[in-house]
Image 1: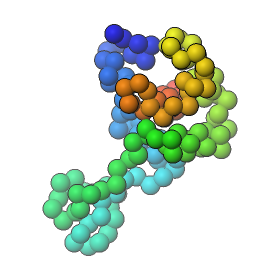
Image 2: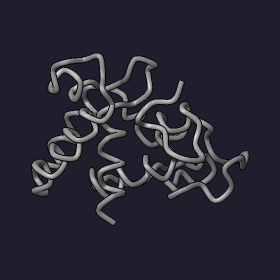
Image 3: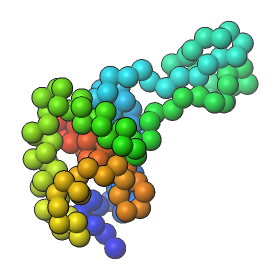
Image 4: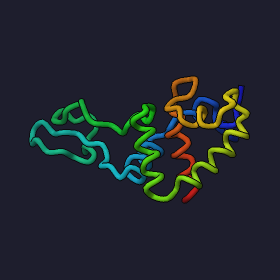
Length: 136
């Protein structure tokens, strides 16, 4: 079954997950955090990113972009939207989505302030990413 989140050419599953580009945008543009890095065992340097993702001299325990599926992620993204003066436009964007989705959740705030959807995929942060993509 396709939902309001699905648009032409995408499967329902791909429309519900954050892409790496969306994770990068949320991390670097919205949250203004450093990109993920690898710590090189040979030189003890942090590299942005590791020049060879599979090189043997770099630890395979690298920091990745956030999952954007926790309450901490939700709160951090919300705080930055407010700080950047984007909250009202974001709320309007989400209200339109909520109405078009015809969600079984009748309370807008309950629907909006969930870190994940029913499938365990990012919800609030996915909305942030889609909103920010529309601002480009």
